[in-house]
Length: 331
Image 1 (cartoon, rainbow, N blue to C red):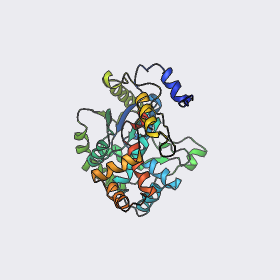
Image 2 (tube, helix red, strand yellow):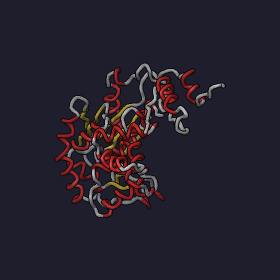
Image 3 (cartoon, rainbow, N blue to C red):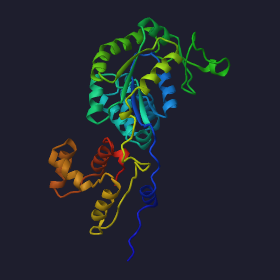
């Protein structure tokens, strides 16, 4: 009997990989800075210049709430109470996002996150480490002026300054609003939090931090940031020799018990370098390691009961969020 062929996408990827790019576009950047230091404006310019995925945790949380996701519902409870969303929720959301194929292929730019060393430590523990950290320094009087005079276009998300960068006359000028937290009193609270945490954050990233004068005109700041990014050593901007255009094949092998799934999976994994995920193996490993999920699963397994779907799916999500999986693909 003739063996069934692998999916065309896998055959094509193995037979004719595209030439490697001369410079890796998958840069990983963090732009910290005080409120109104220009992070958002510069991030938008850099995302366009380098083809990066622009990640703002605030925007991501608002989108999750609007979309009615499980994470959004949890976050909304804190946001409605005027409390900070716990780090664990924000970081889980971030890990899931950077594991997606577009971030793996294009790279990402974190706008204003992490804000604390604890957040940076949690990211590092999950394998999320930036190539460069670009710190925008702006004197406090300038920051307060920017905050109080800042206006938001609710339709486009564009930010304006009533004096230095006013909104276009007409419809845009008529609909811009001042955000509820853009008052001097609230800005001082946010600045105090920033000052309390920023030193430890920059010490955490010592060696890859470039400090820039964010008080200069926007084009000058952008030019300085570009120069800092382009100065990153070539070793970190060249993809490994094994990288090809097929970096995120995602394959499901299904079949009855004894149908040969495990045997074929081993062959496919060896040929295409995919991450082999078997829920049975993952559950046994979690139980052996004594992880929180493993402890829960063990109770069902010892009774001879099926492990609930939500536990198994949570385990799969953890594996898919691990560094490298988005780039290598999975089976």
